[in-house]
Image 1 (cartoon, rainbow, N blue to C red):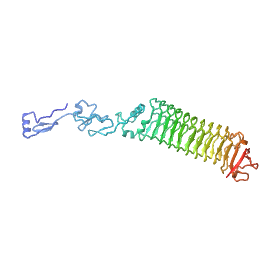
Image 2 (cartoon, rainbow, N blue to C red):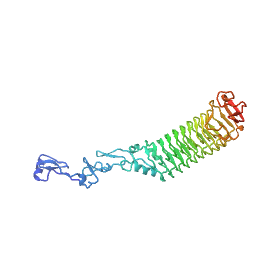
Image 3 (cartoon, rainbow, N blue to C red):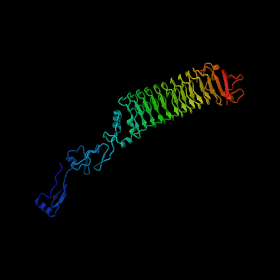
Image 4 (cartoon, one colour):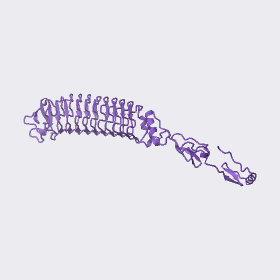
Length: 417
């Protein structure tokens, strides 16, 4: 399509004039009346047969859809270069050298190209990746193609996993996500092959977010402050949890986690209802900051033998019901008990040294067998603050016999300052 170089003029007179004047016209000119004149040509893009696909950008033919094909082409749509993935055509030249992100998981790749490829080139560049902030609700729900989420760590501003985003992804095995700070409701629920979760920046763990992840053995959430209701409920193989900053543990957060043997929550303040109920092989809990223990929080933890709750002031109804291996309870600040907190236990030593009055939210007597479930108070040694001794300053007081308190006879009553 490209024309050959035009000699000064084919007409003899014009040729002579141009020759005399030593004029030499360019390819884009012709010799007219002894002068080099611009050739009258049509738009080369349309003349080249590209009228439906290309537009003229100065002297450059470009594809208006991708802005990449035929970059730098001359006005005859020749001498072009085709820009590579990650480049754009600017002023007739390919610019940018960004490479496409690589993906190991085909399910993640398909979703990324479908949702985050802004220019349709089937490539996710670093610039495009930087604009991604969340995985949308239900994004991968019921998608058995997804196995590994490591590819998502290439998106530096990805902070949120939406509700039900990976719900029921039966082949998902690991969730190691370095930038995520929010996990929404049921985000990973029912992922029954998910075995390892590491979310070092996650702060808020939503309701039922890992509910029924039966293969889950380990979770690391070192910055999480809020573990919502049912978050890890029925994760029956969960053995190791790192929740060093968790403040609030929601209702049923770890119910029926049969694999847990020890739990250390150094910053936890509020333990919700049924939080660890049914953790059948749990032997030790260490919650040095916990102030409130909710209804049935540790109910039916049959192997629990050691508890450390030095700040707990409020012990909920049936909090330790069915902890049949629990023999000694030391609650130095406990002042408020709901009924049946220790029903069906084997307590022989109950230590309540708080100087504050001990109260119960019930019409029944505090330490009756019906309320706290201590079957035989006369077999339990009770330790109280000295100000509850007969004639002391903090009611209720031990009566004159030295063995009765709140109308119940105890094996022994000791006093501490």
